[in-house]
Image (cartoon, rainbow, N blue to C red; front, side, top):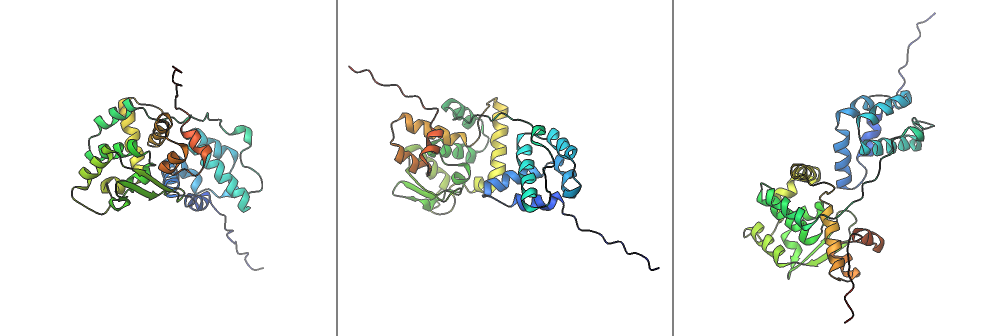
Length: 267
């Protein structure tokens, strides 16, 4: 009787699924995924065959991570279900952690001043000023080019949705551009900031906030701050939406929700 040859059956691993999942989305989204999946806590799951995964494997990973770990792991489970790699959830809904959604808020003028006064690099002081003056998303602001400016107006397409945004430069913004350009007439306004990348900029800002005891804000909080200030100043919604590159009034209302208006006395 001839010897029976054992055949090794191919089994897809979570690492393969993570590679595909991690490549989906805009640049900023991909950067956030890469940052999460580089963490040591994912190593055990990456090499494990999807078909051999137990609920306890997920629970151990969830206990080692935070809200973002739970979000991405849940998305991976759904992807595995949709691809036919598994036929039922590995971890039932009741065992997933419940994280309270942190309400986003605008950064205040005082917080912005403290941050600007405590950054060590001039380029970062300019960068924070640009964010405050324009309300641009952090990736868009880093990608601002000198040739985007014509007759005192900055016009650009948002990286997130391709939406056109345009605004007149303030005196402070014009001064920053002039200082940062140093005689240049083309290229990025802040080339060193642009080279740092989305993930690095977020980390620098987070560490600075932690050092100064400032909580509840990210670089995106500058966007909320601009929307609030525009609303309080009475800038028409359609113009504020152009300034921020918003294509939805509902989204714009959410950004400006922290604004406070006081009706004048009728006298």
